[in-house]
Image 1 (tube, rainbow, N blue to C red):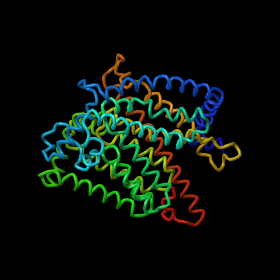
Image 2: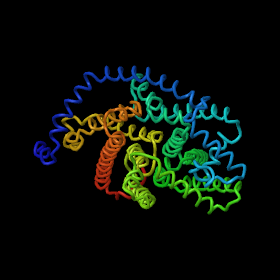
Image 3: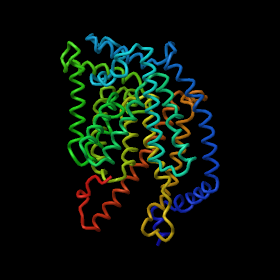
Length: 439
């Protein structure tokens, strides 16, 4: 029966033959490969950081801390009551972002603000490293070291540091807020703290906004989302009070400026593809439809593993609208989901009837290979492919193909987990809708 089912599904060649051999190879040589990877990253990461931190802290060259200096100018211009949208060329952030950034940039000279910014980066990377190791189920000191080094060693982190970008400042409070909502007991102080962290993460909403479907659907109560909405609205009104223009005019000015910059910049995303096809007018509608579709998917799969949801949303957040290399830091989140799947052992033969799909799919091996490919791509120099004798878009094509493949894989795993959960609930006499958000 097992053989006939395998042939019917067309997956015996992978889950039944290749995947077991790859598991054996990893069992025999995985420890050595892990040690080699740790040594290479432990050597390369300090060299990378020593190269980019001077750009952030004191280099005054044209490209050094260029985004930090732009945000510094925008914040000071904004709170001086001078017009920003349409006047400052780089100003493509919503009003609330300038209120969120003021504690880091608004009260110090630029030279001192650079050091405060760098300190926040180190704290953010440290928190992401802890989340990576803890959520990735590190079980040995070597695994802890490998996973904790990942956020420090990937090319988007160095791009963020060198240019003074926001991805680290946004992803660290985002994950802290989501995990507090997930693991907390729903007490007032927990919801207020989580909401505060989530509002801070909205300093760059194109990076973090898609994750707010989790805030809406997973806690199972209204208070967290109301606190987030109230907090963000309060910061928007606070920022607007320093400008002469009305709030609707400010929002329209931001939208116009953001659209122009978004069409010009970015790679490996839907906006980039639409702009390349001459469909600039479709960028905003397609982005909104993608966001709404993600919301519907999140609602439908709200009962599956939390990290599967985070991984899917992380990939969609990277692909849904214009992003550049520094926002590739979002890929850390699907890497966690892939790592967790890779560390789930295959079902033993006696449990094949209960867990047939896993054995036939070899999903732990597939997840491990996708994680390995993603890790190699992320720790390799960001301009490596551009140096090869190949067409200029090669890197974007490779990244897009890898991310879409990972997205399709995680979507399939979420669908299987939801179907398995639904069958269990039906056996227990419950409707799927009664399960709630038990993540």
